[in-house]
Length: 501
Ligand code: NAD
Image 1 (cartoon, rainbow, N blue to C red):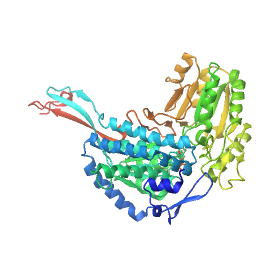
Image 2: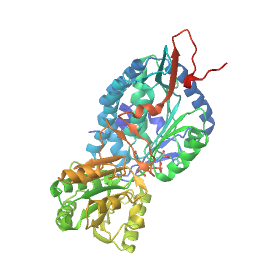
Image 3: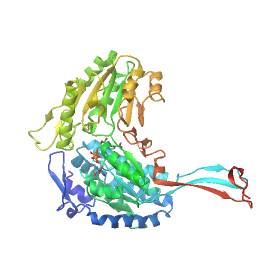
Image 4: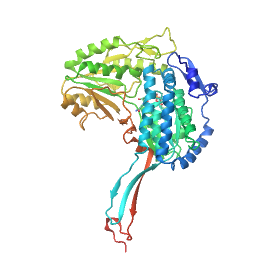
């Protein structure tokens, strides 16, 4: 039987680190205070950043496959601590056990990917217009990378960024969300164990910054930090993005989504119901990729909604650590207020509440916020539908014409993270993933919008930020590209045939 204190201990988090400080961490499971962390003093920030700059000098010349070896060891430590970190995530974020463990597995998977990637960071060789010349591109380390994370993926999002930053030759400065720092610290502690086994890493390679906006700002505004990866709300990204741009830094923004599923008359409805369920109520609707809009054709709407409502009726809501629970709590009281306010706004904008919306378990857990997942049938895509409400709230929109009508509705929101279509019609699915289809960073076919694998690039367009993390060529964002023209002849011809004297 795992309890939080022993899980923290096994992860190497000493009790004095989680007590006596001013940053209070509350468990959404029961509303109890679980830690009082010491925030990083603002006066310490310049020294932390300097240490990162120093570490860069050594790490950038460590061969990339050797850097990959450190990440391989990190993966081993995460494997050994999977149950404990998963448990901490469940207690701190409220994820059901399966999802807490799944998040750690995602971190392990990205370690594996990064180990291989550390031997595959290639540039191009390009022919030259000049005789005896060759052009090549190289991807070099760039410098310290700040990683600022959201509360809902405290382990995996840190690992996505840290693995890629480390193999590309950069030190990291990690500021976890003030709402879920313990899970992030546990993940970092596993890296520290790997660093100790690795033996040759410079001091200051992986540093922790605890706190909120002021500590974040110190990283965002420092010209010594060339890359800032920030995951969170669009509100935050608007501020951070502009500050990093103002100093010509590189930002990697992973912001809010407003993810939709299009269900056409040619969909397998039973499959769609399963996709809707995991997408809309998994992680209590608190994934950036959670399903928020269901765009269904009028010909199949009644049949689909009958199945969806039946499935919603059998959901087990409650303690995320109890077997069988599918819907855990919202993160805090504020999230609950936002959820309730969005439903009221949707009703004021003409919507009909089909199910859910109530707070449940208030008598047994008065300081926790469990809700019955809500579905609101909307007459159109009104203002509230165009906003991301971070909870299990699904809007139903109906279309009656062709797929183009559904795609127009789909794309008519400010966010562009994830999307999907359910259809067995080859023409419909190809249109949806084509240039005239979904405008999101991720467009899926016959699977829901959430639960991406790490191999592909992850991220979204428009107010989601426009950047990519995780697999594919996302590693390049943590590098500086240099183009080298090499003359191995004994002449000095100029490009474009210029004759200079
Ligand atoms: P948040 O924006 O409140 O906080 C995220 C992080 O930003 C925290 O570490 C916080 O301390 C920091 N921060 C907040 N304001 C800041 C400021 N002005 N300057 C510098 N730093 C600041 O988000 P949250 O509530 O923790 O997370 C939920 C949001 O994150 C949702 O919108 C969700 O869609 C989004 N999210 C996106 C992705 C993605 O990959 N696209 C992944 C997870 C979460």
